[in-house]
Length: 276
Image 1 (tube, rainbow, N blue to C red):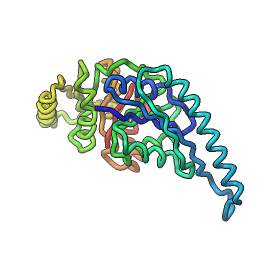
Image 2: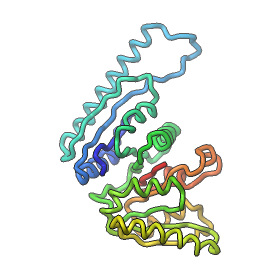
Image 3: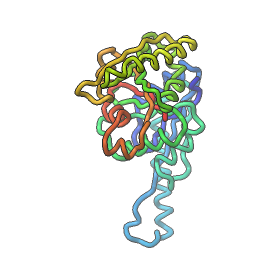
Image 4: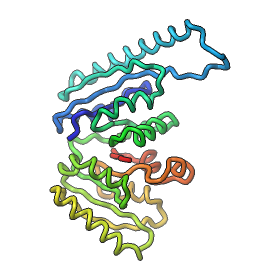
């Protein structure tokens, strides 16, 4: 069950969709939301060999003021809800945003992160760092995504990899509560479909022992990438959540050649639960 649900507020923005999603999950699981507030003061040294002592003091005071302002705004948004919560302040402004979030993520059951309409390098770094470094599942919530009371229609993007296996088991509390769950396997080579179906049926039997009602879907991507075909099927099936493994190949390969993780991160219009 998801008892400790972390929402990192470490890039200056308060994530309304992430906060609402985390609160609903906390209510459903009798858990609580941990909103982590932090401000990173990691900056270039502008060619200096050192900072004058007073600069450190000024930066620390600015960070403390920014954290206090963010904390007050978060308190105003969370206090009216029904989910238990706490606001945790990061006391180390000399860490990067990712380092701040990683420290707290390792003591959580789930990390909930919002993705804005415009994806910048800072968001990519935070996402990749949390997904590959925390050991925790990460629920990515697009800024404009609808936030249901419960994820009833779920799509598992399945291939027999360690990352996908981890994602399925990390998502088990959500899968057990789901009402319509599809497992999608995308393969361009129909000659491999009998083997794909045998692999898929093995997972179906396993999940049904966990009381997860699920059906297998085999599709070819055609002229679409595997990631885009997953998004297409999610739209066609009115899925409310995608479950997927993240970075089954190196981040460098994903950045250069693209991949399912990159496509889902940058283009999904619905929440995606990733595990690595």
